[in-house]
Length: 460
Image (cartoon, rainbow, N blue to C red; front, side, top):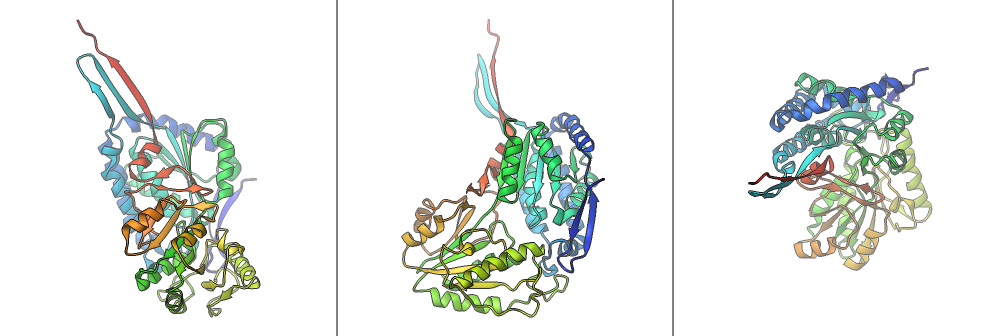
């Protein structure tokens, strides 16, 4: 019996879309087609590959009016925010702009006797497994540079955003990218693992949970397949005594609550210098109490449902446990809270790191806020986590932030901003957040392998 993937809309619990998964044989055939197409694709001039990729990106932009309500139906983001094309285009455009430099050979010698250099060689077939929370932006992080570097790509998207990969493939094919060069595939977990274990791919790029990342590493064990993993996060914000309080509140609370808290680098815990704590908390409560929780198709809605009821159940459980252990919840249950996917955004105080809500990933609209006395105390708390994706520091002192950032176990240090992916900087993490890095010139290095040339010239 063929397995069917079903996207359950968080708006009303109905089946929004469904697709049959590929059989093992059909999946292997997709890999074979990609492998056959890769050599000719890599032989095309880099600029030609760039032009085709960017035409595909532009075609997604032309679809945006259809994409925005589609995203609301699939994962609950309010239509008022207009989708993801701005970031999608920014990331692809930057990677196109730096492609020549990122893929340029390293020239060692070109003399009368020797030519020595290191070139960047595409891995071949790249599997990109994308998440549902920012389904277009996270996918393009890998798709654009992988294709530009000369790889062919199989894109496996999350079931919750079932139609995204299909739409991306259609857009790129309409733009002129050959169908076998960029394929959207519907795969179950076991077939995915079997393909990885069979050395089907030169590289696997995955964004998702720690558990799923561990499964991918186990499947790749012994195959020597390159793996890039962006997994969980518990990103902290630290507001120092010299911070602009209003700016810090506006950014950190938005970073905690936007997209119903379902952001890879969302703010999940905040440490505020004790002198600013009451002021910060009061402003934060004013912001969150002003939100409207409701149907994401309505333009007055600030916060829609979480993408699935089970995600909301985890946040409710963490919050209830914290309250039972002494935490204080400051936001009254909102009228739109249905006890299911629609969840009241919550601010907690009187929290500590004995509580799951301050240690484990929540990935929802809840944030704990703690007062601290010093940089040293804040540093210890920020590092008291199994994750390390980003940390957001709020101060007027750049040197202080950079020095403190050097001691934080994280992939990115922000100062006076948060929850933003700069395509010029490597997107990476440490500890249980994973390994590897996307975007920037380093992103190209991870999607290619070095190949050395030691050419001795014939001399008389």
